Amino acid sequence: MKNVNTGNLNTLEPPFERLAPLPISFNLTRCIVHGNEIIICGGRLRKQCYSYHILKNQYKYICSYPNEALLRGHCVVKIPNENMNEITLLSFGGQNENNEKYTLIMKYVSVWNENGHNKKEYNNKWIDFTDNQNKRISIGKDEDNCEGINAIVSGSNNNLLFITYSPNKIDVFNLDTLQYIKHDILPIENESIGYHCFISKKEKKNEMILFCKKIGLLIRYDENNNNFQFENIRVYTTIRPFLSYGYVNVNDFILFFGGDSAEGDFSKEIYKYSINENKWMKFEQTLPIALSDCNGVITGDNTFIHIIGGYDGEYILSTHIKTNVKKWLKQENTLKEKQWAMEEREKKEIEGMRASDTKIFKRRKEIETIIDHWIHSLSIKTGWIYDFDIIISQYILVRKYFKVSKILQGHSGNVNGVKFSLDGTKVASSSKDETIRIWDVKSGKTIKILKGHSDWVNDVEFSRNGKIIISCSMDKTIRIWDIESETSINILNGHSSNVTRCKFSRDEKNIASCSFDRTIRIWNVKDGNEIKK
Image (cartoon, rainbow, N blue to C red; front, side):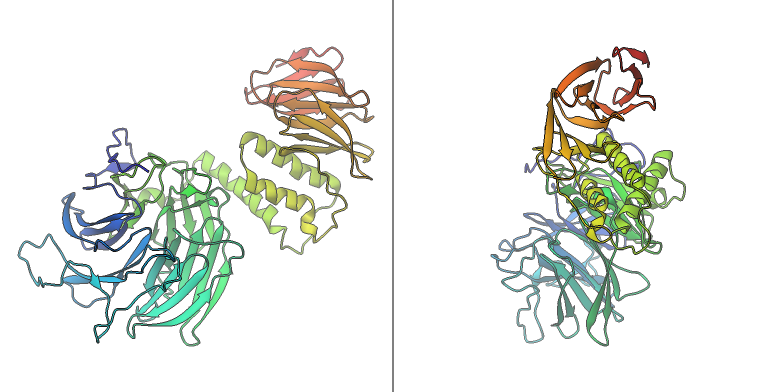
């Protein structure tokens, strides 16, 4: 990770507007809006705090965190304060289980107030959070991992601090009594949170929403009985690998910007989640660059979203951009956005089979239709591993509706396609390991292995008599195979890119194929010549 200022973005285009770059590069910073100011409170291994004046497009230094305070995904919240001239900020977290925890407080008076009104010695400095007896109060125990912690102030009287942190914990801290009143565990089996989205509903103070990778939770807190209720929220498929995205909560929508995955991928995608409708949308418009660890801030009048700092996979950024809220709350969708929405509905329906007690499939043909759709989607969008797992699990009907009769194992790479012979006695499979396997359904054993393709085999199909197979591959060819001899009868050349599907005509005199080269070709089976393109 390079600590280099790369905040110019000279190619920035609408709907984003470039603002004055940050005084220093920041990632994992925490920001609080106060009037016409955005207070920037440190960042990953950054101690400095600044005030950005929204109208002046300028920054002023406020103070720095104590040298001993380690900041690696800390949290800053605004504590309700009746004094209009100052606000109280509470900072905590950013340390793992091996580090000393620091809980600090700052009474902030605007550094832009040239008259110096109400300035006191303790203003605009981070000091220890203490009780009336001057005893230090710590949010987070020594054994807690508080890196990537997130919290919100809510409750019926805005006096409760809800704290969520790794791996699966949620606490409630009373800001009036300065005591913990609840420790609980989030229902996220085998998953963990950190660097996540955590917001409270505007109208219902004791209802909160948490998103992190494929985790989505609606959290309800009963103040009278001091207990939680949890409800799962479905997460949009393509944002599931990601965390550490920027986000804002505006007009009952949550907007997500960027993020990074465990595989080291950095996103420039933008998503919208409707709290009221429980509905997701992916925008065709993206961020100008892929980034994570940025901070999203909504101005007090809900007019502009500011995206501050971040990390692009190589550099920590000093980037500061803004965009108009109206752009992202639009009702009309582009054609591509409509297509994505339709595909997401299909995926949601497939996932819904896991819990649905309604009729799933009528005939084997319907199962094959789902598999065909998966093969096509996998060919188009390489790396769709999560959906691969879902559809395969649905193919065996989640073991709830039908018992798995056989598990066929033998390929050394991903299985891209599978087809039954017409008589149902054999199965052909095509794989990333460049082979085609013929399986005996009754025994579950491999009876033939066809080798010849020099790259992934995408699709395969039996002839009616079960003696011939056709296959297509990323090596740009279609092959016709004699199963008994395990030899390639003919190789059809002509496509200039990955061949994703192949299919016999009804009379089996012709073969149709489609490819990444944007063509569909018709071939004569007998001589292997191309008939039409």
